[in-house]
Length: 411
Image 1: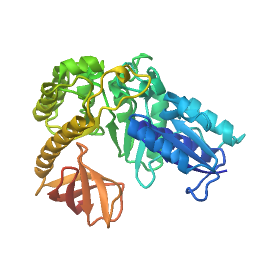
Image 2 (image 1 turned 90 degrees about the vertical axis):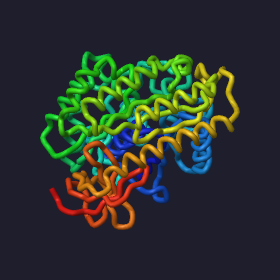
Image 3 (image 1 turned 135 degrees about the vertical axis):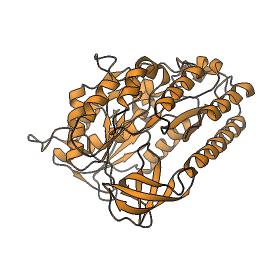
Image 4 (image 1 turned 60 degrees about the horizontal axis):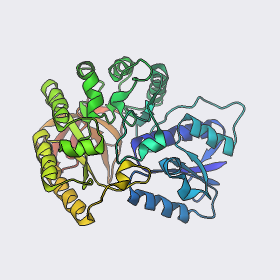
């Protein structure tokens, strides 16, 4: 059967879709574009009300086609789409349900495994499902449940398959990478040490880690980052710089915890890059609370901040809290965005005039290539025609989002 997968939302969803794609092809199905497909699999996101509306609109646009809705929307709010064929989150069980619906081969060509992102040499590997948290605003916990870590040897096999198929970047993803292994007697540092020993020229990007999870493994994690195969990059969510708001969010850490983790990494690896997340306008967030968030951003100097305006989600504790006007959320979102973009521009401009070692991972626009430095700074390289290798490139300009560079020589 000819299938088309549309994916929305986080990197975990992307990894789930790539696993499903591999499984369907292994069982004799054919990938197609939307027009040529006999079935469309919609891997949805439900993190905000705006995203939910977009998903429902897309479901309506696909009316009349054979459609399977997967992901967080049917798992968390099934009552919204009762008339549509649904399978929930595309974990191993969800993928089995899709195969049951579309048909299996008695002799599949390969095992269920991860694959590279379309058009790139980056592979996504889900290392766990669910989390240990109980955040007041989060609907993802309802969709993905409590922490279920994959066995290290399973992850190792996925990574080895990706490398053998040409991947040069491995993205480890989950709802909280720092909590990996807590349920099976393993840990993230142990996993990183295992994967770093695999032969091949590749880099590992560690996915989002909550500060409270990182604190439990901090010393070992810092040691693991010594390995040259691990990007000097951390994605550590702040959400709010106010301890009062963090407590209302039920985040399980303080703003000092966040700052201390960042400081520990920066002390050991001064070049490390930081991505963080902030929610503006959480119920009860005062002007002073918001200024505390701005202060923490100024102190920690992140390279990127994912800014989200608070959105009331059904089946969460925060759904019953008193919401604030959208205009306040928007204004605070604008201020945080302007702040981090100013910081990011300054941080990226420091590279101008330098010759950088970059790993080229995919085709860019207008004859360029996309690449990453060893600390995961994005680089757009001019004067190069193929991805998959380390090259030297001279930085010539910068934006808040990436550095512009010109290819000089291969490594």
